[in-house]
Length: 302
Image (tube, rainbow, N blue to C red):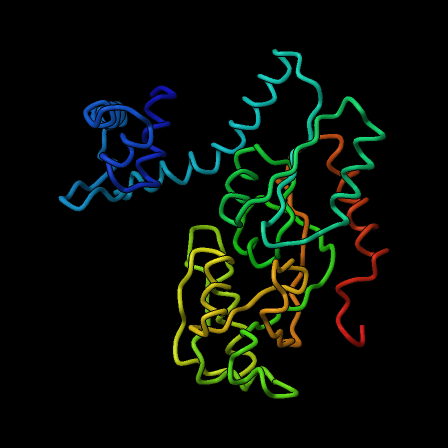
């Protein structure tokens, strides 16, 4: 068993297709098939059921997938750290922020760290939730700032709450409901509601549906969109009602009417257990202090 076989195996598990695996890895399909077949011969059992529609894991394949998918992030972190030391790279701190979040406190904290540690290489990337979690798992990110619902079922991930943020429904200014002085969430019954298309590792769609049920909103259906921009485009044309977070920075706020939901979700800073970056505890503590000092996000009455 070699690293190339493991690499192809893990990729094939994720795609479920030999042709797609070959395309993503820029190799010929027979190269993928050959390495998988060699791995199966060495192990003495089949890893995949092969059909015209693709491949699926056998029970033995599932055992191997569970083992390597848990071990892969640790291996990636060790390799990245070894390469950094061998190349004499300076210390780094990589932070990811959910693309729809506006968190000025994070920018301030990172600026303070740059001043205090001029040799520290700090990077900040704005990403969607699946990409955030992928890069956190494989060691490319030291910390990820997102919502707590994205962490559900994530083994080996720890997080600290930074603040609470209210969820807001959003309609266009020329929506029939926008003429009302006061709009309660239940008034959205009978409307279509936008939801982000489900992707692996993203809990936003399930959060929306739980929220709608909690508030006893009875939509006529859900409109699946790829991202916030697509959702707002649907809102502007009155195709659907959207859901945003109160810190989302709208480019044209005058085009929308916001409806408070009265419910809050936690913005958290997440990291992997075992991450020994010496600057990580400092980042987390300063973020908590900055968010607490801003006094934002506390629910009424708290």
